[in-house]
Length: 393
Ligand code: SAH
Image (cartoon, rainbow, N blue to C red):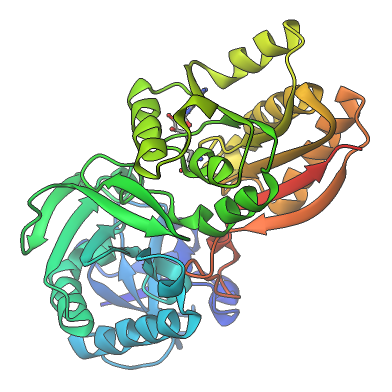
């Protein structure tokens, strides 16, 4: 099956970017099945790449290879072996038994996410192409890791754009209890593989949580958007004087509390508040409350650049309020996981927030996702998590 591009639209492929948008296509063979492999040809019929076809998505094709090679089980075996080798080299196991094994486009397997939680593998197929090869991926993953339990969490919203239904359940083996305990930098976390966010947890924040632990000693900490307590537990383990954890989900706050208890941390130093962070911060400002350290780890406000304006206002709002609530010598740890907001824009937003709050803050550190979420140089979209540690004088 062939897909011919419009003149000049081969440029991104020549730079090794793996996506072809529907608008770049001049002509496609009729009846290409969802997820089937196609050859991408230039307008003068030169071979450019071999890709998976997504008939329902704006991202119409995602490249498997830029070579004229067969795309089959053995092809994917080599790709999977390469990602496993990278993870071994990174030695992530030293930090945690829960980490990302395969990070989709960034690991040259578009649409496929595989995370490891102890001896359980969790797979997420996000695209027509990764759905098409799912059974093959499942067999290869079990063979190459030697593990026997594989769970599917293909329930991310983006599947809708590919014309795919959500799917959750066992692909191989058995999980007696979806609530599992993982360890991360010598702390324990209870994770629900069935209902937890993403594949169960936010594995991308591992290093940043540790950094918070290192900075939290004797501080009054406000953890906004705390979810199940990744930052709260670390702040407490780092000797925080108090940690107030805020989230709009009562269920998340309950799990956060359990994770504090799981690590034998002084529960009396921990309190939680169910509410909307935007309102809570305003209320605290009106009450003249203050903190030594504030963490802002909100959900994705801008999935794509089209949402950037609205997201900019939201980030500015919470960062401005946080700067106001910070005591002298306070620390703001602020994140964005929005694909539509790049690190330069995020820094500009935080700078604007400091300015409007009347605070002369410094950036002490730039933070990003962990090494098990590598970024292909040809696919900058893979670098979605950006964070700043700002010091207030
Ligand atoms: N910091 C967490 C991950 C945060 S995920 C960790 O390291 O694991 C984002 C969280 O924000 C979710 O728990 C969600 O319930 C919460 N949330 C989303 N919108 C919110 C709002 N407006 N106010 C408070 N919490 C919100």
